[in-house]
Length: 283
Image (cartoon, rainbow, N blue to C red; front, side, top):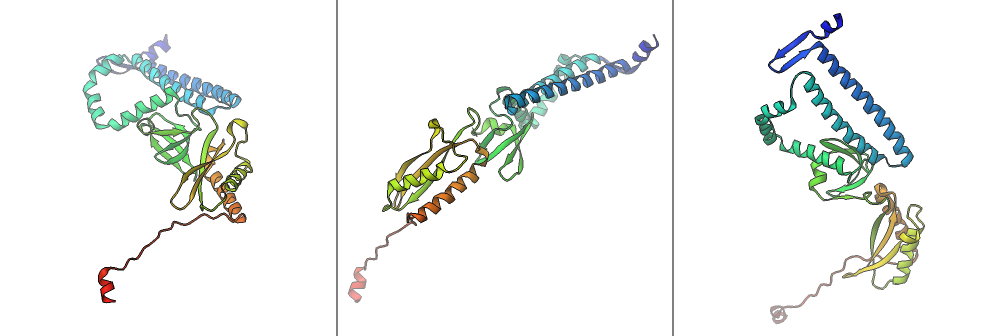
C-alpha cells in the first residue's frame, strides 16, 4: 500500500505529460533490461561468428537489432509518461521540416547507415576501395563508419559516401580476389622468356594461389611505342596487404630480368633537324 502511494507520487504534469516516480522506475528498468538483453545477444553472436568465421555479418546483424530495439524502447518510454508518439510527431512536424532543411547531410547519413546495415553489402572486416582509398571496414555506425588504411590510420567516413559513390568491395562475393601487375620490356626481348619469368615470380610467392581454377597467367597486353606491355594476373586472399605483395613480386621480377639481360626501356623520342632555305643561302 505504502509502495503504491510512493510510486504514484507525481513529479511533473503538463497536459498529456505525466511523470511519476513509478514511471521513472519503469523507464530505468526497461533500459537496464534492454541493455542486459543486448549484451547477451551480442555474446551469442560473437560465439556464433567465431564458429562460422564470419565476424562482419553478425556484427551487422547486432548493430541493426540494437538500433531497432532502442527505437522500440523509446516509444515504450513515451507511452509510460503519457505521450503518444503519433501526437509527438504531429506536433513537431514543423520542427522536423526545419531540422530536415538545416541538417540534410546528417539525415542522409542516417538513412544510408540503415540501408548499409539492412542490405549487408558492406560488412565489418570487408576490404573496400572508395575514391582510390583502400581500407578495411572496422566499424559501421548509424551515421558514420570507421575504416583502417594500410598505414594503420583510422578514417571516419560518412555513410552516404558508401551509398552515393562507386565502391569496390573486394570481399563482397568471395574471399579470393584477382590482381594485376603490368610491366614493359624492350622489343628485342624474348617474349616467351618474359612470360616464363613472370609466371615463376608469381608461383614462388607463398600468398599467390595455385589452385587450378585460379592459376596465375600472363598476357601480352599491348604493343607500346617503345616497349612490349605484359600483364601478370594472379589471385590471392590477402587483399588488404596487396600493395606489399605486389611490391615483393616486382622486386623478384626486376632481379630475374637483370639476371636474364631483359631490359625495361626508357621512353625514346627521335628529333629531326632540317636546315632552312635561309641558312642554306647564308652558307
